[in-house]
Image (tube, rainbow, N blue to C red; front, side, top):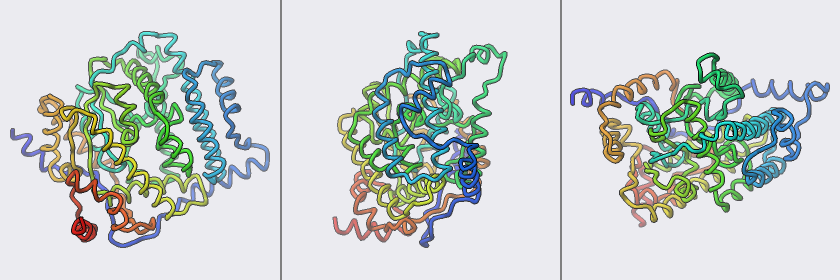
Length: 452
C-alpha cells in the first residue's frame, strides 16, 4: 500500500530526552510564589477561608453546594480518609497547595453527587454495555499516550476527551446540550484549568501535551473514588500510596465503568464501539481491571526503564513543587523507582493468568522507528483492517507537532539515581521483554547483563 509506505516515514513528534549530564531539578515558576503570597495575604485579611481538609466538612460542603446527598457506593470514604491523613502529615502543602486541594476535593465530591443524579434520572445509562475494550497497559512514560491517541483517531473506537477526564459528569440540564440548544461548558472549564496549569508549570506542555478535546486517559475517573497514582504524582503522600497497594481496587474500577457509561451516553456514542482505555494505574490493578472488564484486550507497552524512571520522576517533581515548598529530589527518585518496580512486578504476576491470545507487547523503540508497522501489528491483534484508520493517524501526527512544543529533558542524576541502581531493580524486566537500552545507559546494561 503506497499510503502506508509513505506514512511510515512520517516521524511521531512525541519524545523526551534522557540527558547525559546530571542537572539540578527545575524550579517552579514565579507564578506559584505570587499565588501563594496572595492566598496567604487573603487569609490574613479574612478574605480567603483557611483550608479545611476534613472529610466530614468536605462531604457536607458538596451536599450544600448541590442540594444532593447520594454519593453512591460509600467505599470511597476509606481511601479518602487515608489520603487526607497523608496530606496533613506528609504532603507539606503550601498555601497554594492546600487551596487547590480543597478545590479538587470539592470538584470530585460534587461530581459523585451529580453522577448519582443522572443514574436515577436516566437508568438506561447503567444498562449500557462495555464490550471488548482495548486497554493499553504500561509504566508511566512508556508511550501509552502516543499509542492511545493513535488508536483514538480511529472512529471505530470510543474514547474520552481531556475535558471529560477533568469533568466526567455533565451539569444539570445537559439534555439541552444534547439537543443542540446549549453549549457544553466543560471544554471551556478545562481550557481555563489548563491555562492556569501552564502558568503554574509551562513544562507540562513538554511532559504531557494536551488540550481540552485531545484523547485522554481515564485516571480522572479513578480519582472519583479517591483512588490512584494521580494523587502520588501531585502530592507527597507515600503512606496513602502504600495503603492503596494493599487494597483491592475493584470498587474504584466499578465506579470507573459506570462513569464510562455516563460519558458514552453524554457523547451520544454507540455502545457497540469498543472503548480505548489507558492509564499506568492499570499496571498495579490488572486483577481489578479484568474483574470489571472480563473481555478486555490488553496492549502492553515497554520502554527502557532508565528513561521510564527518569521521566516519571521528573513528571512527579514538576507537579509536586507547585504544591509544596519542601520537596527532596533524592527521596522522590527513590519513591518512583520503587513504584515503577512494583508496577512491573504486579503486571508480570497478573500476565501469568491471562491467555496469550488476549494480549500483545509493543516496544517504545519500535513505535519510534516505524509507527505504522507497529500499528499494523496492533490492528492484526485487534482483528481490524488498519487502512480506514491511517488518514486519521497521520492527522494526529501532524497535530502532535503543534502540541509538542519542545522535548522533555531530565536526568536520573538530578534525582539521586544511577543507571546501575535502576537496572539492579529492573534489569530482569529488560531481559524478559527484550527491551532496547540505548545511549548513555547502554554500558551500564552491558555490565549488568554480563553478571547474569
